[in-house]
Image 1 (cartoon, rainbow, N blue to C red):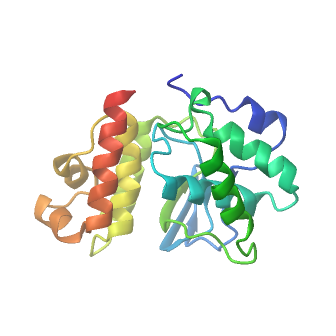
Image 2: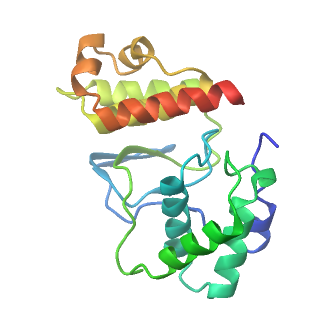
Length: 206
């Protein structure tokens, strides 16, 4: 299955997307702009990118538990088994039952009072805006392009929407953010480079 089967999550009212409670710099009809970024926006399973490492799996499961603190261990285990069943379209690899159980135990021991590490986001779109990916990317570029400096978080925002259209390249990032390619090279860190390559590989498999 190339697409995720979200039926179980929706039928069981599992929260996997949540807007930030932080105060935005400016609010628009389509969403919000956070000049300094927000860590409070969660939008899981919203792109073609799938879970491709155990580390990523742990983050997804921890975040699901964080967003759904009332889940019993039994229901959380059921949810984890659903997510890790490859045919449901969430993961790119097969995971044995012993490893799944180990991951579940590790996640369940985590402190729910601490927010899972999350990417800083500066542009957040509301659901159901009717905007195309190209329109969203244009908005991201227009707002971020006005800033005096491009940072990793700005590049990450642009990467997400370019990924929806196709392969992520330095040229496309520079065009979207209205800056030079040199600026992108100077500000894209090693972790983001790896994420870019992973996203591109996943896009090729879709």
